[in-house]
Length: 178
Image (cartoon, rainbow, N blue to C red; front, side, top):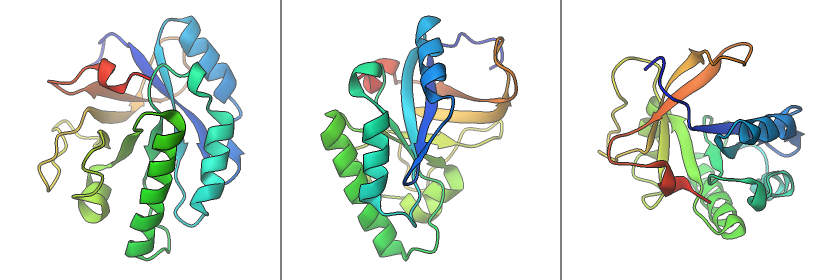
């Protein structure tokens, strides 16, 4: 997949209750300057009140500055019981959807999905991470729109490793348009 044309980028904006990425505004501006479709993501922290996280995300990520729907990055369950984890995540996702007027893209790793999220959020698109040459497999057979296949990619003009992903067959970036 090396050498493929880059057409979109998701940029970390926020995490948990109060973190705003130091380079968010710059990264968003530069991505749009070079012609990439840009979206933003929030790293969800299950141990942090979802309403506080919603305030952090929505006060930082402005709808009019986005080409793509936001991503909710779900990688941990913390020490929260399963039922509370799912209930709080449902509430957060519903309010993000309401605020932006579009359903966010949900992101997680294949194993985390299969262990905790299998069969949930049926009406949402998923981005699944699996850093191996074979595509992810979800236990409920769900199709996902994007596969993040590497965390050690390189892109000319960017120092350090970058995550690399690709749209899956049968999907187009227009499905994620704001």
